[in-house]
Length: 439
View (spheres, rainbow, N blue to C red):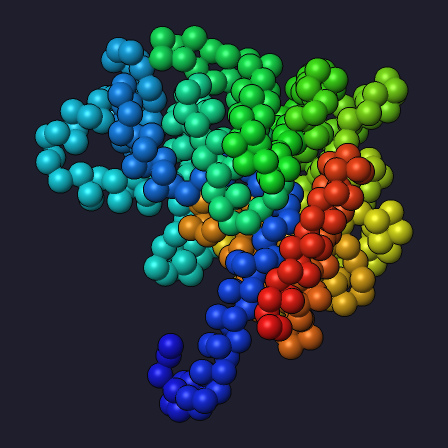
């Protein structure tokens, strides 16, 4: 706790103790009960704490590393010496490297730093949005070679579900690029293989943890693709949704919105499902920007015009009164990811987050965590804590948290009967928690 009664901190020690007590109590409550809902906005390669990747995956047999010109690393699993890559050192077998350096703690710590955005002085390390976004995407690339190795792909998903379950999550929807996974001999697996793998892992996990509702995939593609590629991708998404209806929830674009193409650019591709009489739900990232008046700033309206099920982030929504009114009328929630919005420099102080106004006006909201592993955060409870402490001030209470958690199930892509049962289970746990707290 900071020193009290100083010029820089005018709070009395009693004030600070009370604030500390409230914040600690809030986190205890959130951890004990309020993370029993769903995480609806989570990206595939940022689910699992990086300690697991470093301590478990990089210690497996046949794992190679190379060091890039940009002072990052890349990994690959191979049965023999991998082919060299441009702007990267020669591949080194990690087991041999660790044997040479004896104490590998510093090496492992450097891998951890490459896999996260965590830094002691973020304002100095990431002074502008373009810098933090570049570092953000580099971290994904570091994880890529590890997670796309077929055996790790399955283990990673299982561990991700376990970590979310340990954080009291009942259900997860994962934005997934579904890249080609590879075998030790270099053979590649297609998206069908990845979807079947997801299906098998979720089935196995729910068999081991019957109170976990499961997980579904929102197939994603980078918004930097061209119109022709988008048509092929949406056709692929329709096929995957037809072939894997239980595990595939829908489709979305990912990547930095300000630098990507606006949704309207992809209008021909996005119109295909309706033109063909096919149901393909959309879950569009939109409004993850503070650049007002640009083409990208119109993504919120276009997302609604394409009948999006939810809006990812929606940070800019408060600046668009017509869109806001329409989204309320259509009952389309925004998926707010507090820590992500702060780390990626949309807002420095969460007390200034525009969602506070939206919530006061009754706009539907769900809280999620986006990329918790990259931020050094828990699966979801840290984001709920930040939302509770930052968004509503003294007007937030247990009822607010209860509503947010119920929203996470209400606005999920689960079948209606499953939603109903899940909310009933949640309310039973809630009533038990409140009753025990009063005794």
